[in-house]
Amino acid sequence: MPAKGKIIVLRFSAMGDVAMVASVLKEFSLQNPDVELVMVSRQAFEPFFKDINNLIFHAIHPKTLHKGVKGLYSLYKELKKYQPITIADLHDNLRSRILSMFFRIAGVKVKRIDKGRAEKRALTRPKNKVLKQLTLTVERYAIVFRALNFNLKLSHKLQSVQKDIPQNARELFKDNEAITIGISPFAQHIYKVYPLEKMERVIDKLNDLGFQILIFGGGNDEKNNADNWASKFIHVKNVIGKFTLTEELNIISNLDLMLSMDSSGMHMASLMGIRVVSIWGPTHPYAGFLGYGQNYGDCLQIEHPSRPNSIYGNKPCICGVQSCIDGIDPGIIVQKIIEIVNGKRINHHQTRKI
Image (cartoon, rainbow, N blue to C red; front, top):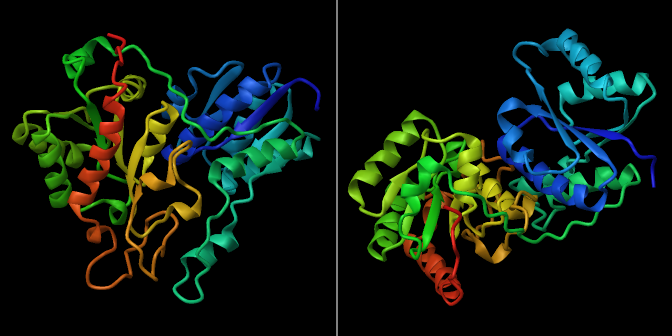
């Protein structure tokens, strides 16, 4: 085992990737209680790490204080005060490499994530595709800590962390016996978004079945869509833009199930120990970005020789006239949710923290 001390952990974005880091650090903290962690990420993501023992959160401000090489050197001087024994670079981008270089010059050991870029290119190329499960991203994170000689064995199991429902959200859970489903129907990249008219058919059916439905995630345009659904369907409520990230996580922790794209909604639910039915289009769970502790059997996707053609969902589908995500029937999504909920109802004695 290495000497006790502080590990600086670098992962600046994106939201879902940072949430996955939090899932890994939770387990690391339990298995290495004498080791202190300094998590360096964007200020907005601090709530992901709130419950991790022995962790200090240090914000990076890449557009202001820490912009450019000069700004990164300022960040290095801030972080040097923690007297770290090692640096775990879980990002491997230009910023993290420059920051790591400063520490390496100062004699601090640095280990960097292997993102498996060649494997991912083989998975997504149109010809001679190698369709196989790649190392999970959370395992790639864990490998960095093992390379630093720390013990870390991931359970890959959902850990329920039910939180108190915020005072201003209690109305969402006024029927304590109702099955409450979160839906995170949007994503950063449009190609990962299930067609909204089909999602509305899913919501319509779930509403008819009496499920309470909460819509998560997005900006003003997405909020308008969610408001429209809330006005149409009696059991649908929009939470977009109404709560802080901490409050949203607390609300998510009280759901019975989440329906999500391949997006941060899946990873936030995973962090809170909530099972997710996920919808996949040009991306694929084989790339390693399935939510921590989630089941491959809960991933809804169609088989097509052109899938996947994108790792991050920033490229359009190349499956033909109809996009691959459009080929997923709303009825299949509803049926999957019913199947899970029926199994859950047998033991549905959840007392929410109101």
